[in-house]
Image 1: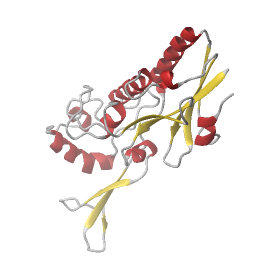
Image 2: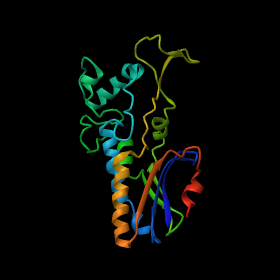
Image 3: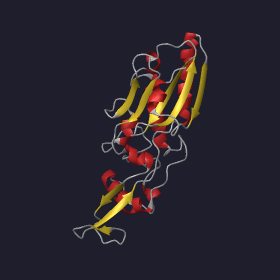
Image 4: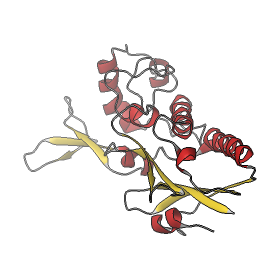
Length: 238
């Protein structure tokens, strides 16, 4: 029985989430993984498109709505850049699927001019889209994700965005120059959860491979953040 792991890793190199799969009579995994244009990469990219369209709901709990500070200081800029007129509420103005998208039509998979995070996860042709095998030809490991530096802030809910408001506000703090600076904290909106669409896509591709090789498939999904590191996950073979 040959086993492999699809590993989501954070910036420290620790395994964040793992799908483990086993298939009989498997030797060379290079054809199964393919490259950025192959079936597995396409399954991942499509699952990320669904994630953005459902504001995270397709991979787990829906992302949190815009916070008060985001509505106050971030959304006006976003509306202006996207040429979206002001409405009675932010949801009435910003269409569904707009969280983390910079598009006036977020329900469309088309990439808008101001976008970087979305295409880096959803378009295999994007230069910051990550899909690579590790460990050589027969490796049972693959790394998928995005190379956008600030993606980890959204994924883990850390960091903040700062700006100088045009009007006086008691929500900011004075800097050394006496200027009022407002800090808008980044809510946690996970980007790397697998979700059912990706898991089922892997299962289907594994089944196709197993039938071709006369094997069987077993698939499990579990949280392994504190139990495996990348080296163990990539090199595991039993």
